[in-house]
Length: 312
Image (cartoon, rainbow, N blue to C red; front, top):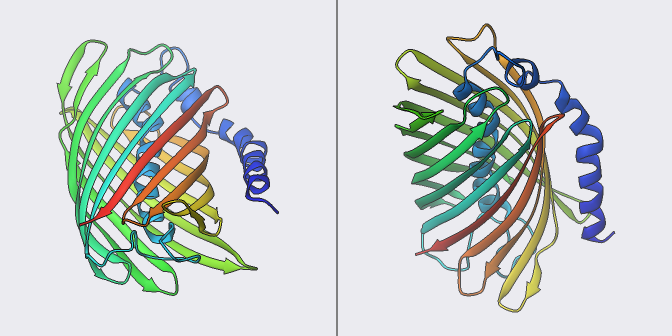
């Protein structure tokens, strides 16, 4: 069956089966109604954090299972060179429409050293900005620079464990009122590559957490558990390298709370990603992807990502 048919099937299943269930979250009752229970920054975090975590998670998944010159199966390398050092450049943007409106952009820069086959340790810098407007609430603008270590471990038999910790001091503006706060976030993901019937698949689960204090009197805690799977095409020869297409379907189960509201914001949202990974004969990889998510029955998020990894 052609890859295009698989992608159309994945798209249909994502929104026919999962999107209706996205109605069952608290964004509507706690953030989208007049006199919302939670403050605008908490509601903005509930809307944005899933996309932020997905952006970083995709960097690792493509490193582990993306295309490599001369290889048609799974691989843990990102280029045909022998250098243990890799530079990571990834830019992601998303737009929110519906009851919520807004946008977010993030640039991720990283450098790491390979420790063994598929294992590496590095340092990451994330520069981001976002603007979110919830119904009946002022616009929340956030600008942040986060930095911290990341790692990936090859556990053998196409099983990987990876994670990161990022810290920073974001700047906020809520309806024209500025503030400066603190942010700590991290995640751990375990992923498994499976070859079945001549096709390649990846199953994974991830736990992401975030704590931020936009003002001294407010603390926001966010937790997202994600389960997902990818279907990968075989690497195909192109003019200057190898290309692998993929479709990824995942579901976020989130809980957001602060010391002001009366209970957690429980969040359930599916996300579908379709992308292409290109390994260049000259070394390095290019990744292009698009994703869509249903935040609630009246709020939808679409995103784009472009990345380049280069061994040096």
